[in-house]
Image (cartoon, rainbow, N blue to C red; front, side, top):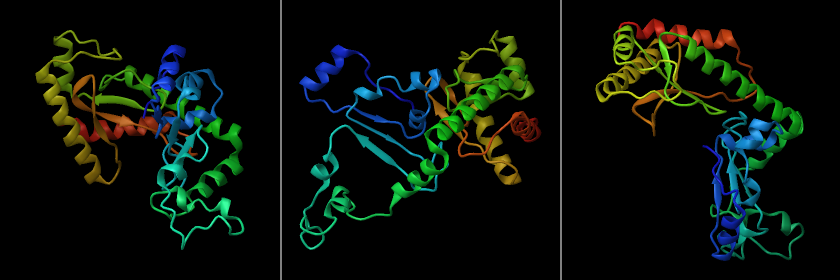
Amino acid sequence: CRIVSSTNHDKDERQRRCKIWVHVDGAWGGSAIFSSRADMKSAMKGIQNVDSFTFNPHKLLGAPQQTTAFVSRHKGILKAANSSGAKYLFDCRKNGAECDLGDSSYTCGRRTDAVKLWALWKYYGPTGIGQMLERKVDSLSLFAQMIRNHDSFMLACKPWLFNVNFFYLPERIRQKLKDSGVDLQSDNPVLSDDISKELATVSVKLKLKLHQSGEMLIPYQPLSNQKADGFRLVLAGYKNFDESDFRKVLQLMEKYGKTL
């Protein structure tokens, strides 16, 4: 998910005056909060002005599922919103009652998800986590450039820090694009309806062939700027990905897609 929040002081003041709760869903990209690098900080710009913010360490950071963090500037807001006040479970007179978070969740009790994030944070430290994320961003930037330089692929939209969306182009579609004057190097190509329809079919069939081969799983998804679903590459966890990994991805897609 992309970080979207208000950074305009006047808007922030209106939100407070009108009692508008501003929440940011940072499910995937919200982990950028651990990095101090300029491009990552830019993605998080304005986050300090919101009321609440979530991110999922089990996604970009590769923590065990399920690990979701909810952060709010309003102390006690979860308990105020979710508490059922079940007397047989929760009693403020008990020793350590302030540490029992069960009444703060609408599910009452759940696994200790926070331990997974705590362990990750403890082992790598905030700097280590930030560096892990920065390596992912740099790797995806390399992959985007490889897409631009490869005749059989084309970016579907401008790459973002944490994901790259692209099309595989069989020779017949590649020729149609050239004949139509489409710039294959563009970060935001404008495609005709008939080519979009063909690309959509290619994406579905290629994913199925890759899945059936047992060699690779890669998702395709709808895009707001395209009528055809495009392939999406994201990176998660501590593993480093380099040019050889990306070359393997492109080779496999060519191998199973050349006859489509």
